[in-house]
Image 1 (cartoon, rainbow, N blue to C red):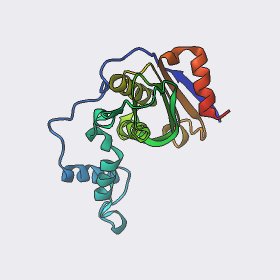
Image 2: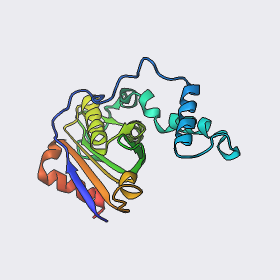
Image 3: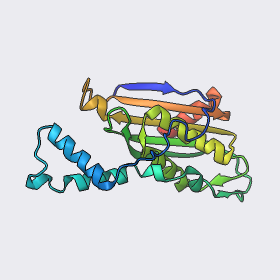
Image 4: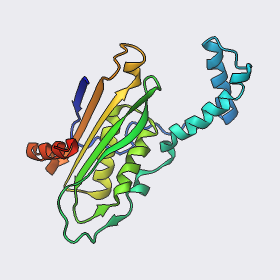
Length: 213
C-alpha cells in the first residue's frame, strides 16, 4: 500500500481550537438544512419527491448530527480527570489502533483509519478510554488529517503537561480513492512528536511498539 508520510512541526500552533471557525450566528434551521439536501438532489438530476427520496433530507440531516457531533464536545471535559496514584510509573503510555472515520473539509467525503497515541506522564495519567474519545471528538468535525494530528497532540499537551507526546494517524482518503486520481489503497501517515518523543531513539521505540515488532 502506497503511503504518504507527513511529519508536523512539533511547536505549538496556538489554541487547541485553532482553525475551528466559530459557530455562525445565522445557523440555519433543521428545515432549511433539509431544503439544502433537496436542492442537491435536484442538482444531481434526482427527484426529491419520489418515494425512495421523500425522507432522505431528514435522514441526511440526522446523519450529519452524528458525523459532526465533535463540534459540540470539549476536549477539556474528556481530559479533565487525571489520576496521580500511579505508583511512580514514568514510562511510555501507548494506546494504538484507535479506529476512526472523519470527513475531509475539502470534499466532505470520509477518510478512515487508525490513530496511535503515546505520552510520557508527568506526575499523572488519564484514563485510557479518554484517548480514544479524544480522537473521536476531532474526527467528528470537518478535518484535514494534518490538523487532526496536531489538535490531538496539542490537547494532550495542554491538559496533561506530559514529558512528551507522540501522535500518528494512518488513513485512506476517499477523495483520492473514489474520485480524482482514484488510487484505491493509498495510505497517508501523519505524525507529531514533542518533548522526550522528539528524540529519534524514542521515536523508533514508539514506532516499534505501534508496529508490534
